[in-house]
Image (cartoon, rainbow, N blue to C red; front, side, top):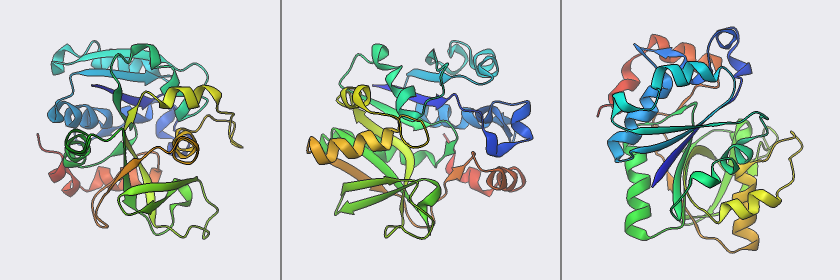
Length: 247
């Protein structure tokens, strides 16, 4: 199974740092944040990576190259038009040769056990789709996930502040079936002008009767959103979160 990491965005909320850095290459305790993700996925067993690049792509490509230093293989896909997570994933279709692929946002850090647990659920339960959630007092910055037991019923992208009845947020870590590509091809841009991957999953649940298995992170489990300036500043000063990132 191949692992896709989305790393094309500008990181506008991280100015002034992203005037000089690709946000996934921001330094954290001696290495770029993206390296933590790659190490965790490698530790889970992934060897074949697709990294979607765009803004300041040369920083990622120059640092990681072909992946030889990490004993992995990396292919790079250029997202010229930054038209959302769904648009980025669709660019990878020609590189996916199996029925399923792993996907993570490039600016989200989670303990390595999350990657392993996600893959274990896929293997043991033979699930076509696995979606990871984290707890949030109000998921208005992300996507609210509504569940029936261990399965997703609905996804509401960027719900208005204070309107969500769910405290489960789309974490940004998935295993997806290649069935997602057909919906993404037909999906129209959202009000933000983007092709939204969560919307495609929601359509699959409602119209195609997909069963999307949800892995719920614990309420107090670490999740680092590196698209957020305040979070990045905090993670730079505090190294305690690194205990979940041991290989």
